Length: 86
Length: 187
Image (cartoon, rainbow over all chains, first blue to last red):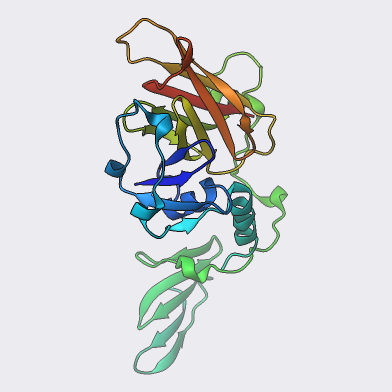
């Protein structure tokens, strides 16, 4: 699975390593306030000839799977969770 | 023999006594634990469940404990097969990924993901943040061996934070995707 989101530079594709749950990766590694979509690997082109021209089409993708909170906020969440274990 | 405290299923509490100095806790006549001058021993097959060991441990005077191992800087050097006395600083995060075709993670440690930002532009995102941004980055890249043109990778300081590091992969005269890309973080 991949996480995709739009930036001013173009389309960003996040490839999780598997160390964290993909939903947590998306929340952490997508910038704060930016919509993201989780897609199958084969939905991202493997031909990178025109990589810098890739764009995200929200109409085709439908409702976003979520919105990033950014790494700083995510790490702050983890610190709170570590200090207050359930 | 021993002093027995038995929770009997017919008669309830059953006590037997002698002068052995040993005490046995029993359930339905079966030994559960034995207390004697050596300490406490659980009977065969009986254990203290981890769920029973909740709460905080009491403060312990370490000076009274024996059979504890302690480690020195020298032991750490030995552990890392390092000769001499120069200290060892461990890698805090690393990742190897394929940057051509479908970008693929080959291996990683303390890296949650790699963001493909475009041709020759990648970001390694840390699973656990670095203590500050004074860490050192080693990044290398290579072609697939089908060409003898050199490739190199550089730090892109647009993202050099406690949570991520971005690199540029250079090939020939511009940015280019390469097969093998490695990033290591030392602090």
